[in-house]
Image 1 (cartoon, one colour):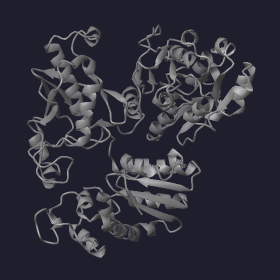
Image 2 (cartoon, helix red, strand yellow):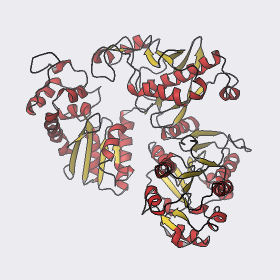
Image 3 (tube, helix red, strand yellow):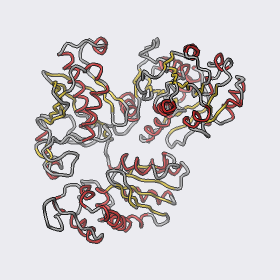
Image 4 (tube, helix red, strand yellow):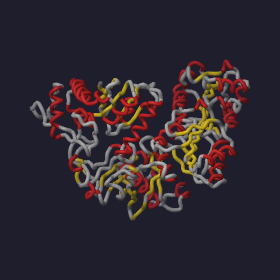
Length: 621
């Protein structure tokens, strides 16, 4: 059993991850005001001291602790180390993503140091964004300087704390009424003070508002946490700063919690190999750095920053002149599972990413890169570039730029068992992956997970559920429904028909279906399961819809013919560049009409809205 200490953004994210398992867990918060909707989780309310924690863990057979508390909750972090030692359980510390320590900010070790530096900089007018619980810590400053303000939550408990600390009510401002930039414009402070609260704590927004106003920013650094501070209990701690890392840590420490385990994309494996190969090159060039003071030899794991900004660690190995990563598919049935993905890194005149042995080549248009380029998609290329720049830039300045060559010795043979030859990718596999993580695929388990998410959406109280094929389409559609809770957005993957049936069974009044063109053309043809194993796009039917829409397809450059043969397209998204801009809405309307023909009968008691989304996020209705 798992016990999560939350009440934060990270706590809510942890719940989203754990709910996917369909397994019981416990979620503890200090107050009722931090409650969230749970389906499989059991909510525990009220602050607990160590003896109460021990009793709770024994009662519920807790074998794993997730510390998703606020980074400044020092007493709780310390208590959880004692708890973990006592019950012999590991801890997953779900921390935040923190921006770098920019030099234009004034960094303070603690609040006493902040007061000292505020005085040294002659700050008379201060806007404090550090929270109501820090009023007493800054009391020596605000008692002396009458033109200082605290922004707090507009709730009774916060106002009571301010009152108990004798902070003047007229100098309180509230989150609900003003943004940071508005407060700065109204109050004209000389500086703001904030805590190093990470991206999820709004740190960047506060800093940027102050920069635009040309005022100073004082930042109280987050408290140290093991391994940067002593861990006298010698507790096993796994560090994560995002949902994928949390899931992988749970799978490692409590394997039975998730019925199916996640894996890594080929893009993540290629990135890990590239990071490792760069470390190998550094050692070869006899560069001495703090990294190698910490590691007496090359590491067996390297950090990889995923596209969502979180960092995970990935196992790697080293050989003569290259590094490698073994592809791990988890429980997803993937022909690339267990293959070796290699990276060779060399100094070069320009930064470039090349495909070597076993990496396919694009031979047809319609992909991220033109024919003749290595089949390494845009997201993995950006991952490799970003990781080498962000993680290794302090160590590789004199080696830059670099040539990174990705190879897969078994790639050519494996590619014959994939759709690559049909798509026009020849000579090997593709290096792909948008999120960097592969969620395990099992039709029964996936449909069950959709059902769980739909049940959570219903429990949120929302009359509308927004179903999408994945994270990309969801990001675009969310802007249309800013007031809906996160739980109201559900991924259907390929199971559109099953998801609509669930929406009807659960009694949703309104359903929004977001779909991108590749799945839309299959759905319009009546395929309610759009998985490539079940159906491919029907080009004759697409031609029919183009004719229904009155679309004259643009001829190739230099040709006088009025139409081109769409039988040559490999991906449906190529249509976006082939259809005249003024006819796009007509084409979209035709597709949506055909989709409605098959989808609306599955929702007889609700209202269905279908949104067609292009690759740039434009939405057609």
